[in-house]
Image (tube, rainbow, N blue to C red; front, side, top):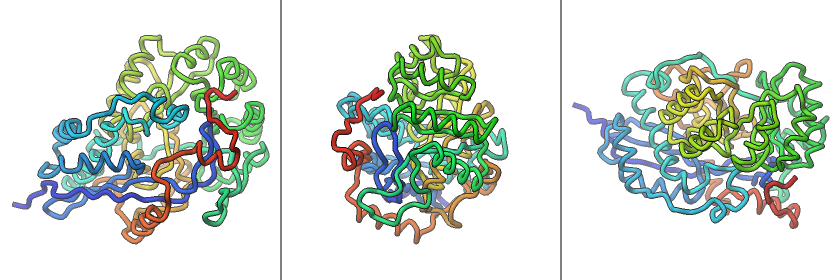
Length: 430
């Protein structure tokens, strides 16, 4: 009888080009880091996944990888138990770890380490399960509630090129004015067919960002619009902005810092508040519920919520408490995007189009090149597992990028200080 026990775990760090996108913490560095996980069985089958690629994550994956040896690809509960025993979360406060940046990237916090490692292995194991069962991952999650998953046009204020010019400027050009922002949106919508629009804010003075969103509303009448300043506005500024955008917003994402700040905004705001910053685990979910749910929409992320199955449980909790659900995104490639798509397709109560940074990434690590959106949506694959496989030449090239860059931890603040030495990143800024 053929053995399908896990015999080896490979983790390959990669780096790919990332445009100079502005946000509350500063600006994206020229290289985004990810890890490609491969779990191989005695029979030679390989399950794959993509996750964070910062140095603490790579260390945690290496620490936990021996726990999988000898496991069946179906033994997800045992995998979680073994990982939790090997990778003990450090008791580090947010301010000790990343200062004011922590709320911008909750997935980088050390308190999420166990959940992140479990997710990284779970997706690869479910890819193996799908190959063994000759079924797509979405079927392992209960089947598709929808054949395709809608995504949003994710707009950023940005510079034309990185300060140190590590490679040719990206094709999107500068976007600092309302006119440039509308041009960015039109290009993205024409290329991908997105129906809704999200603007990353918190980078420029609020009045400039309001002008940008109003220009988008005029240019794309009827399109659902969202704005996300990543908690970089005070409560008074948040309320002033939402008043200026009355009748424009579909939802208001993380205007003020902290759940208390969000609750203060919610008291005087008719637009539902969404978050990927203040409800990022079960403890925070409970506190939001105890406060009467000032946050009405949870932007989930299986990478740090603990995996696909954990996010399905989150979806059920959102339904129980009457909360909306969608998905947060980070700079990612096709394996991560396809895992998101299988998950989102399996969740009946997906309330809003999901976020994705994918249009900003030119590189790819899967065979066949970039995934293709149809009318703003990504169709869930019906082939076994995740439905994507690794392009070995591309993996080697992106791994070389990693070896040739000095970046080992994302630091938008330090990168911004190369442009503006006085930049502090302190929140709220406005």
